[in-house]
Image (cartoon, rainbow, N blue to C red; front, side, top):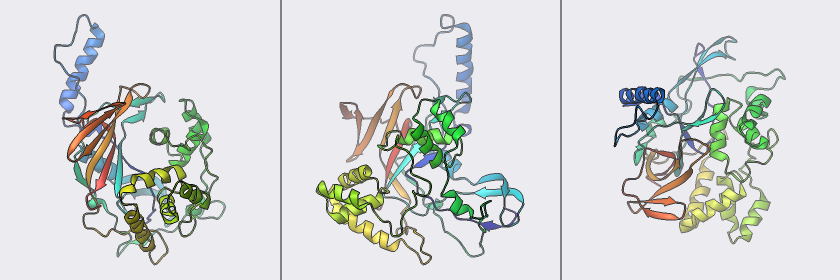
Length: 366
């Protein structure tokens, strides 16, 4: 902050993870009173302090907007070694959007790691609206008056940006995650994906990706995750998708949209069958327009409403902790909410919008 210089670091994410600030609960007084009553019950025992008939459990009620503001608020980093001044001081980090996807996955960070390194579930209600906007959080990129922060040289003489491409999994962090019962390869992937940040961030990544087909595969060698020039695709994957009946342009587009993951590419193709030609044409036009004069890939925001979203569906975890319960899904079709609970499908008159774990939104202009 002392140098007044800036650095923009582009990053591609699969979903938007939102922190849940319990301090923003609108019913903090009621929650506190209920917790005191529960502690009293535990001291006296159920026989002497039974719950009154009709009494409901009180959990924090946190506004969705507070989660957005908390996650996207500027963060102060202490002891940042500035490559411009050569001194340690405060730096400010802010997350903004270069582009808004057609479909946006929003994950509420309900799962966390307790002080004893055990995974826990946060009991809280976040009433997610059926419509919301991220337009005010769009990145404007480098603006007039801003000066770019120089790259910090490493001990080997390379710059910080090139060194970051060779990040290895921290062995201590991996050991902590493995002790919780996850595979070593999955833990290594989590550590690398989160930049060896901490166990909580890695656990969030694991919960989000543990169903991925390659979760237990060895992580790619350092530097192998970098995309080839021109978003090159794996031709073997293209051939496999063509064997399933898809045209070559469709297969290539799907692989570009899914980071060359053939399983996700197949799912992408099947999910766009209603207008596959039109979707692929749009992808190709966006790809052609995505490279700016400097050669960096930045998707353009052509619509004024590009950051406006409407809720399509959400997944909820039914259970008090991470080791029990199961997941149910609610989807909105023709203005009506439908619940999918294993093999049971029914109309949902009052969908629990505040209890979801993973929400799917669609851009309103898509």
